[in-house]
Amino acid sequence: MANVVGVYLHIPFCRSKCDYCDFYSMPAGDDLMDRYQKALLTQIKSMVPRLKGRTVDTIYIGGGTPSYYGEKRLRELLGYLQRHLSVAKNAEITVECNPDTVDLKSMIRLRKAGVNRISLGMQSADPDQLRCVHRVHDPQQVIWAVEDIRAAKIENLSLDLIYGLPGQSIDSWTDTIRAALALHPDHLSCYGLKVEEGTPLARRVDEEGDMDLPDGDSQADFYLEAVEQIQQAGFRQYEISNFARTGMESRHNLKYWMGREYAGFGPGAHSYLDGIRYAWPRDLAGYLEALEAGEPVAMAEKETVPPREQAREYLLLRMRTMRGIEEWEYRRSFGLNFEPISRRLEFFESHRWAEQSDHRWHFTPQGFLLSNTLIADLLDAQAGTLTEQQIDWEALRPPVQEPKFLNRWRNSP
Image (spheres, rainbow, N blue to C red):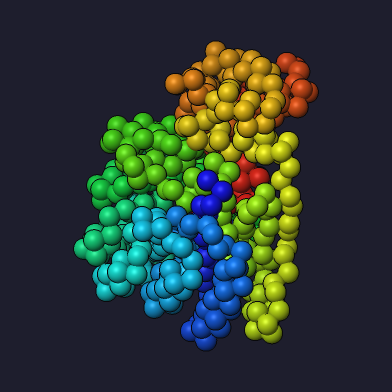
């Protein structure tokens, strides 16, 4: 699939910053957003020759809040990509939206521009929990936004939910799941709240104490409750935090987890092309200055991924998914011995942390709760450094967390 690529466009603007958000975003007026639009188009234009010969089969516009950026600018971006790159007729084109920035006219115009998937930040059905982390929408606006999205005939709707919010109980979390399911989405993402260093939430925790944040055991209970409730509603879990109706999995995000190619644009965006990972700096001013002066944007990070590291990524990323890993696929791809990994997976199976389906190994929901530790163990087995005494298994029950590697390279929230 070397001739297929995804495109990610980062829109670093929001109406207001949520207390927990660590993504690169800021408030802005029209003048700054107009400058950014020109710079972003300039950067895309500079990459067109490198992407020639590749088919773009996914486009993801994330942020920030792309719907706050305005449908006119989004349509201009999509039109440029469609004119200058080979965008597949059945390409998945996603735009992230917040409920307070959705209206019927803009959704109709985006759908006519090719958008066929909306990722909507619902987060919670409890107004007090939304206010506590400074979300600017309320539960009623979620309902109105979904009505507008469906009226615009956008057929693929994903809702984002957060568990572990201040004051959240298992009952209020269950209420949020039920409220989300009542909106008949096609996809659900459920993320555990993380108190990221440098965020307003982290500062509030330092000043006010734990703010009634659920502990790790409670977050684990929330996660398992979500898995049970959502699967009972007819969704299939296909990744640690993601659930979809048949055929509605996020094709773009699967690129990250399956080690496929994608090109990112905008400050803070990441790319993986031709065996090289690179990132643009989280520096809007520097980004604008360089492109307005006709100069290339300097990369913040760049590294070639050699075969050995590709083998590590195979374990690290694919074990996040229900597709998991397969022995002969691994042997054929990397020429490495699978036996040490197989022994560890059999040990995990004996603890009901992993299972095998159609010759492929994947974690159970209980295993996903331990995924960071279990994957680290598999990487040790791969490197031949595993000892049985390294880890006290019975003492472990951490909440679901994103691996640091995926946080580093993942573009979308």
